[in-house]
Length: 394
Image (cartoon, rainbow, N blue to C red):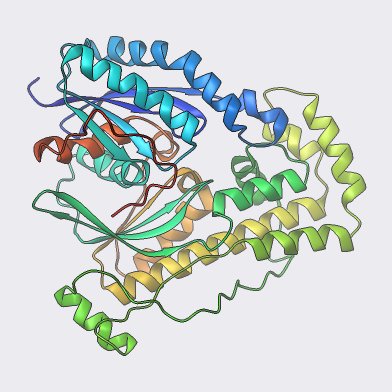
């Protein structure tokens, strides 16, 4: 089948991934080696261990992706790799290998922002379904263990442009899920566990007040668009527009205070030890170790996080007059978030798109998809580029 075949490589955190994608719209292969078992005993990702595991996995994962796609190093048209943001040591493993492959096979090398990859995961799957008419501009909520960002995204002559209009001021939403799960003795990673337990609790049992971030609106950077003039009139100035920032350290502290005031710590220690001694846990295993207060607290915590994410995103969509909403990143796999966004966005008359669960979490198909517009624009990386742990998306 004709087209542009790009080999994508992703190693920004704790998944070693490689994929072959055709012309930014068809996944030919997608291989992910997870490190969850390595980091589980520590309750979170250990950067040094992550780098070591990437070194072990990178060659076999890339070979498997090429084999499943029935391609070789010579037959792909370009090689794409995550430049950042992420863990510096982890990123360097993928970048070093991608550089070596590009040099040896004499292929163009494309550096991709990890966050742009998450946004293009949505576009990739919509195109794969035959939907080539996604209305733009889009408002993209990228929400994961390391990120909670809002971007205005739209295509330009040479690729896409992104404007950050909101970010977390402290913990990312996924990070808050993991920390609360660890606090409750539910293990790591915490988001999927709380998502599975929430339906068994009362989401109204514990009242969490919305986080209040007191700050002056900060001006947008860059030139105004026509609809930007309308936004400026709404906020009082053509050059001054509202930000939609997030904050989750407060709710994490509130959970801790609830645990302390309700004397839940003894039960948490028993649960932590019981779950740590078992492998491949099912929801029944967690339920057997969770009392009603724990289930109610988990459900209430999740409801508060989801409500905040949805409320701020929809408020931003109204303020910036967007045509579509994308919700992507690891937390986009959360059932309640998907259902609530689907319902509330429909009431606003806005389509809301999510990637499938395999493409919500870190993967290389999204990196190869994001690289395709750069390939068409001949936006190739020089061989001396390096990892940027704090790389911004613009």
